[in-house]
Length: 102
Length: 163
Image: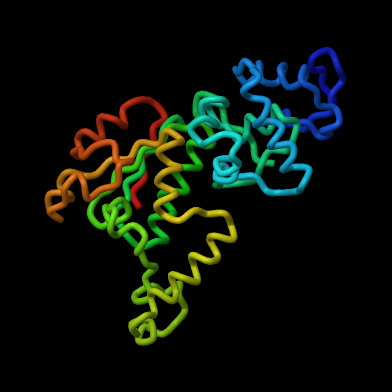
């Protein structure tokens, strides 16, 4: 389905995750972050870029991997995206919801 | 696609009690606690009786899967009792878990602490096994009583789970 995010028509699934990463932009990310109760800052961007990179390389994501990425540690990841970091960060990054239990 | 439950029915806090030291039980508790934190749900673990082995510095990397009295192993009980059998089965299991990106026990405890999961040691069990605070990993917040743990469980939509 399509919805309007940051004044643009964006394709999303029923949980609000982008279905086409090409439609992603910083403005879209900011709008989604706001919905999730997060004020996007420059500190969030390296994490979002890391997640997008992993997605493009088809690497399954987990909290442990993010913690070992060198981009952010686990405590920092929870602090940047409170209340479900991997899910929220993935949604803001415009990638599918990770199916990870770890 | 499962139906999303009503917002006010959402789980807010998971209080897990770990009473066993077999590695499969320890991982069950850790994965449930970590999974809760990943969903924005509060999580706490109360380590009691043999569960305390999972947070003892000297023991946590030496936990085993049970090869005797465990029908899920599908090997004869007599074979399961042979020397080295538990270590062998445990190593096989650990290799499979590493493939799935499941961390070793020590690293898992660090991840839980970093995610904001509270870890408590049961006072009665600590006394019974003659343990000192320094025998336990630093990530343990405190040694508390059952009553303390129940007090922490107060509030709506808290769930307790005994493992």
